[in-house]
Amino acid sequence: MRREVTLSCKNIKKAFGATLAVENVSFEIRGGQIRGLIGENGSGKTTLVSMLAGILKCDEGSMEKDGMQCSLANVIDANKKGISMIVQEMCTIDGLTIAQNIFFGHEKSFSKYGILNLAKMNSVAKELLEKYGIPDVDPAADITSLSFEQRKLTEFVKALYTNPDVLIVDETTTALSQHGRELLFKIMHEFKQQGKPVIFITHDLPELFEHCDSVTVMRDGKIVGTYDIQELSENKIKALMVGREFEDGGKYYREDLESTYEDEVVLKVEGLSKPGAFQDINFELHKGEILGIGGLTNCGMHDLGKSLFGMEKAESGKVTYYMNKKTIEVTTARKAIANKIAYVSKNRDQESLMLTSSIMDNIALPGIDQLSTATFVSPGKKYKYAIQNSKQLSIKMHNVKQMVMHLSGGNKQKVAISKWLANGSEIFILDCPTRGIDISVKAAVYKLMQEFKTQGRSVIMISEELLELIGMSDRIIMMKQGKISGLAERGKDISEEYLLNYMI
Ligand SMILES: Nc1ncnc2c1ncn2[C@@H]1O[C@H](COP(=O)(O)OP(=O)(O)OP(=O)(O)O)[C@@H](O)[C@H]1O
Ligand SMILES: [Mg+2]
Image (cartoon, rainbow, N blue to C red; front, side, top):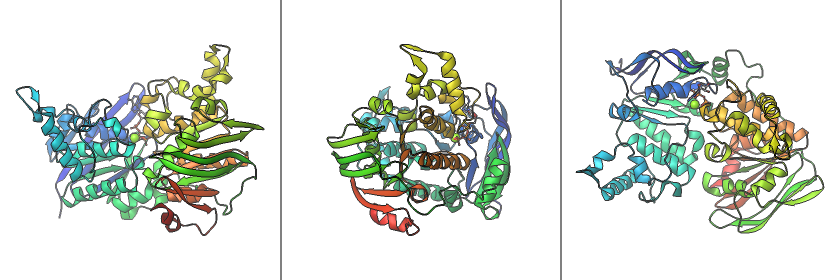
């Protein structure tokens, strides 16, 4: 049976200055299906769906919903017309409560004679939070009291409580734990069952194959094609994305099956504890080692990463680095940076980047000592340094003077990593390093990690992706409820099931 077309757009275009982000795109999606949208970083996915959700205005083109002309004035107008989107970046507003965030722009429904009924707003928020599987949260609390993931889940509630009939999900799963993902997939499939369309952007191919009925591939601001999921394979998608066959068959993890690292210890963690986060953590990192740390989102590993970098203070215990015949106790992030220790946070926009500064300033920041004499930083040197270093991960940009804020999600992540490559870091603490980056850049990051190994540099990779941990690590530390629950050495016997035993 042919279903009614629910949402379509014709010849839409969007340019940002000289960047033509979306070029003459026509797109159609019918009810009752989940449509994947995939493409390299910067290929225009977010820009396209932002126009469909009223976040951006298109320069040219038109949109139809249920066969009727539909133009969107803004997000709230789109919500009213039944279109909701869960966005790629964190978009909760600090300083407002959880309830105020959920109902932002819709406060009118809780006010009478101009007076806002906060108690009503909070009680409706509470009901909604529970309905969408986020209990034990006080809606009157400031949004900043929530964890990274809980904030993202609040955005679900915001997107869903108006009961939309089109749902757009932009690269959200990378910010979520397994639990959050399951919640999201359940919601997406409910939409499908109700005969509503879902547009789902992800860089995760297994996720795409598991949940989508069809997939639209974008390249350089244009649509390459739309395919039934049965017509596609991982390699075919990769080839469609980059416009050529993948010579290596798309392999990107390490191929050797044995752990290889030197005896020399470069980091020793002893009895490290931080109440509420992690407890009695002990381990050593070796020269030339990739040490994976895995577990559920709230197992304490993300906080541990911050403490190793001196960004968050542990209550007791010791973190000692041994570098260039020196013993260094890292107590502050500043000291870590001065000693060539790098840290990429999972919370990219808030903790790894200065969004309103240029790509150049972001890349140059950790290496500023190398670029300055006394108090003077040479602008020419800084410019060259940034250009040189932005090439390694091929950041898609016009020039290094562009603001980081205006880059696509994956290209921001490349900046977050590049700045540490630039200053010649020796030890890397990478928290979810491949978050939001497309498969070819993922391959480049993994290759880089292997190069570090051969150069005798060391990496701690904190990750929620078991396959990535297995694929890249010499040893894997598993954490559960703040404690180390297991340690696995690289070898052919390590499987996802094996690691899961230590996780849950
Ligand atoms: N506000 C903006 N100002 C200037 N350029 C922008 C802006 N937003 C996006 N762009 C540019 O438009 C292009 C498309 O970006 P978009 O965010 O749509 O990519 P994407 O496919 O979502 O990538 P990713 O997978 O990295 O999220 C990129 O070159 C990006 O730098
Ligand atoms: Mg995007």
